Length: 186
Image (tube, rainbow, N blue to C red; front, side, top):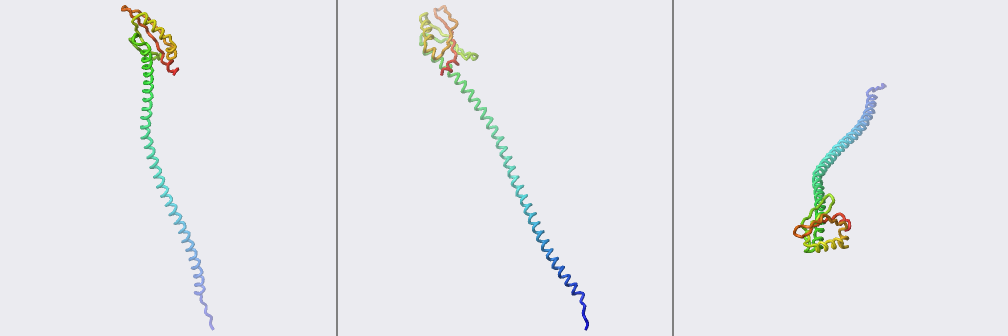
C-alpha cells in the first residue's frame, strides 16, 4: 500500500489558519479605522460647530460695539443737555434771588421811595439799588426801615453809600444788598 503524501493538504491547513488570522486582523483594522474615522468626523463636526458659534459671538460683539458707540453720542448729548439745564437753573435761581430782593424792598419802601436804578455786581454777588426820596422825612423813614429787625433778618449786611441831595430837593441813596447772605439765611 502506498501512502499518499499530500503536500497540498498541509499547505491548505496553513493557508486556512493564516486566512483566519488575516480576517481577524482585517476586522480589527476595519474596527480601528471605523473608530478613527468616526472620531475624525466628530472632531471635524465639532470644529465646524464651534467655528459657527464663534462667528455668531463675534457678530454679536461687533453689533454690541456699534450699538454702544451709537449710544455714546446719545449719552454725550444727554450730558451736554444736563449741563445746560443745570446752568440755566442756576441762572434762574440767581435771577429769582434778584427779583425777590427787588420785590421785597419795593414793597417795604412803599410808594414814597422810588427805585431809580438797579445794578447787579457779579464779583460781590450783590444788588445795588439807587433809591430816591421826595423829602428829608421820607429819607428818615427809609433809614428807620433799613435799621429794622425785619430787614436785618432777611438781608443782614445792607450797605448805604453816596447820599446826595439833588437840586429839586430830592435825596438819592445807593444801597448795596448782598444776595449770598440772604441765600445762606434761607
